[in-house]
Image 1: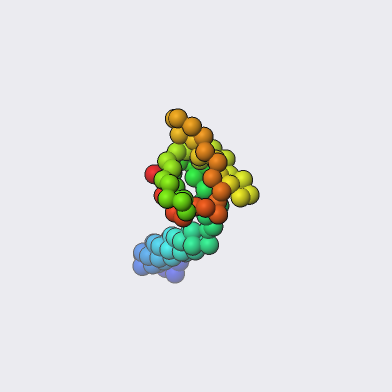
Image 2: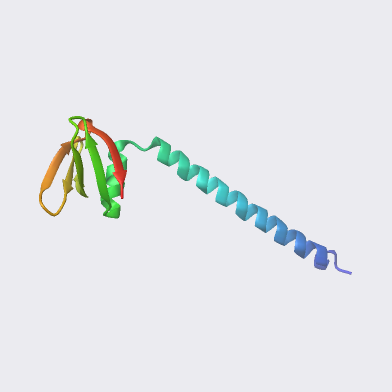
Length: 99
């Protein structure tokens, strides 16, 4: 009998493959979480621009701005809604919520 054609080896191979897939999925999720923790506010705004997300921005002077991120500069972001376009200094953003 060929030792490599034993039926238990096939089941063992499937189990090992399943464990490897689970491990790879867990490592990818951990890497994704770590990247999100290291992301700056500017990085998050760029991501919102790429995804064409509508954001809700709270500024240090108490204003709440809602709109789509149209562009992100070194120190500012351009938020556009149906009525107007606003340029906001990133240093004045207190919170950001993507919708």
